[in-house]
Length: 369
Ligand code: TRP
Image (tube, rainbow, N blue to C red):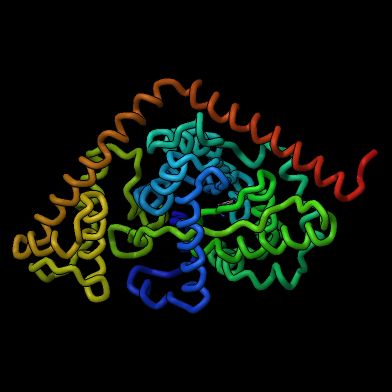
């Protein structure tokens, strides 16, 4: 998931090409197969994915995940989005601005095309029964399995704090997010692949141990975004802390200012060369995504007109692209009570589903009193 926070994988744009490990390629292949099946028969799929409410959504989220969620929603897949508020405190010790971030996340979703009549939007903290699944699930996984999760390791290093119990076990919590509603497809970024592995392990072990005859949980498949990873405006990974991302909620003026001050290089002639010219290429990639053109073609067109002309093109094309979304967002923001209603309704539905699943789990475990 194009997660905006502190460089989760500490991977930057220039070494993107080196990330093609065998297991990643295999995951990509499985993801493509799942996606093909989903297009054939959307009605048998239940999708769950989510975001941490640590700030506003940006263009990276839009192209990396939101677009695909909207497409699945409109295909007729049962779609569910969790705003992972408990995950916020895995690597920081404050919940400042959390309410504002959550409401604005709902706004961003709706402005980007998520339809609350089709997609259930809810938060961790409002669904008690979902969280209660954590106890039996924790019993199904060992300390060693938790400790070797590479994403947890890099998040711990990036946080600068020691490993908390929650950071160590949040992948199990993520399994609760996914399995409480029996989702069978989970769109994520590659940093979340280990968490889907843990989820599959938990589902399998639970079924083997307690529900052999009537399996309760599916073993969900990961779907990796097909979109190219969108770099931050300066060529580094898009991250709130670098100030290099274009927020969906920013004004046209703020966007222009941000793009104008993004660094380029001293060579006038514009070429698309991500390895040697990451900054110019990041601008071209951004323009390519919003215009559905090839970055190479845009580079050729601008050529000797230089970085100034390139930036003008990026500013205009990004602002044109985002204008209708921003207009919808501003309209929606006039009625925050409606936004709260959307979330309350999602939370209510999520509770119904979670209570039902927890009852099945209690039954399977013989905990019926
Ligand atoms: N871990 C995800 C992230 O940091 C967010 C998330 C929480 C999630 N629960 C989930 C994603 C369940 C997919 C499914 O970006």
